[in-house]
Length: 142
Image (cartoon, rainbow, N blue to C red; front, side, top):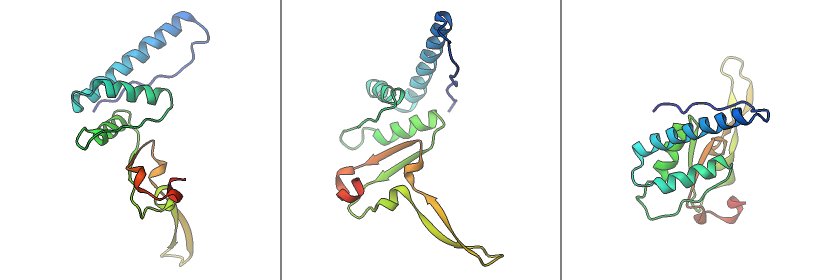
């Protein structure tokens, strides 16, 4: 998969620079849609809405029957943007530490010294798919 171009910089109130920046943003968005449409077929409206949520720094809920490529769509988006992706399968026995991460006691083999090391949970990814949140206990949902 090719990478989408990086957009940065300030227009400093210059209308010409502002319109050029908007054209670059539109071009990058079109490239991203094209890349995703090579993998996700027939879901153009959903891809558009997903990108709106992403660009507005929002969240989105994808609902549908199994087999509509919801997970594939989110993982494809994260790959197209070179972002890390995690999927959390919510179950009745899921604990908060399973999501946030936990401290693990490790022993240094050379010195024999023991230290705690934090293992990051899936919450530390750029793109997170939380699947079947309704199945987890309220304590974990909080």
